[in-house]
Figure 1 (tube, rainbow, N blue to C red):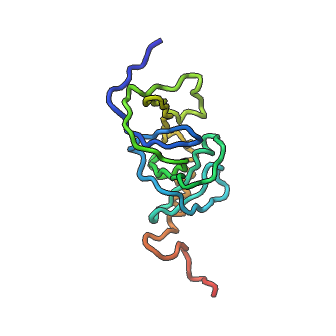
Figure 2 (figure 1 turned 180 degrees about the horizontal axis):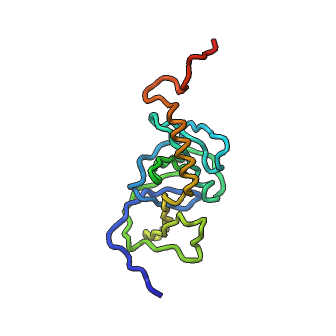
Figure 3 (figure 1 turned 180 degrees about the vertical axis):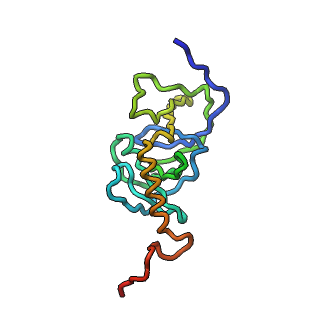
Length: 180
């Protein structure tokens, strides 16, 4: 069996928790971390897409990672955060239980997933980082959504984004038929 040569250097990760497990994503994909805000539900979406938010005039789809990964649901609490990240040129919000830290992890401390764990459903799992006694599951955000799901979210963002004003005012396109 040929063993892969481990890369030298470090990876900088944003670490968050879901269902008492730690996950990490490359910091370069993360734009910001916010508290949950009013989510507008969109009918007909997969259950893991909670809806959209208006973040400073930009429509951002919100994805519940617990639901996406098939984990038990949990009510949002004071620790719940939305990790706003770039996924295939699309800005999305990822709901997580909490965000704990940004850390540097030596690339030689990252192992690929064992073949018994790798599957089509788990293709978004990049590997496992080892830090002291902790294991951090590394995610490939580019693969969390299927191409069809990415396309659908992009269409929703563009369609709804046309209705969002850039500064103040109403989000309605047509205000001429107001009822008094």
